[in-house]
Length: 151
Image 1 (cartoon, helix red, strand yellow):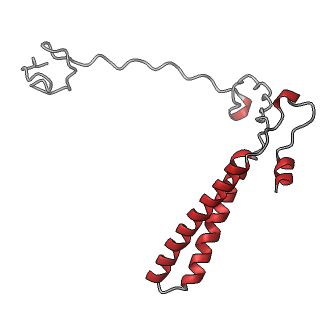
Image 2: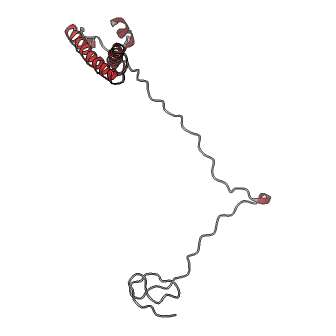
Image 3: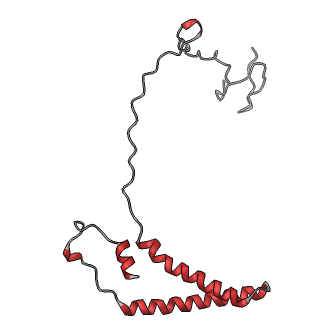
């Protein structure tokens, strides 16, 4: 197991310095963490067995499945957290410059003329009191309620 872990985390010889050599493995931590994981697996297996009783399933199979699934989950965490390979991000290549916009050909090969600027609508009547625009034919201002002059 240690050999596989060493191979999975092996770095090239030129990367790193001799001062940063791997530390000795702490066996007490390994034993305590293994015992704690077995206790957690047993609790998870017991929970699966209780769920199996509720659903009239095989209790022994449920305990074994709960025990093994948590075992696999606990054993996968170090692999997923430490043994990831971090590659450099892929830098996209720059796109070629776009050609300048030319007039789109219209019928008979004539280029499309740019649209004429829009003219402002004719000045609408406004309320002499508040300055709000009014529609033709209204007698009262919809904003302030003032009487509008006719005409």
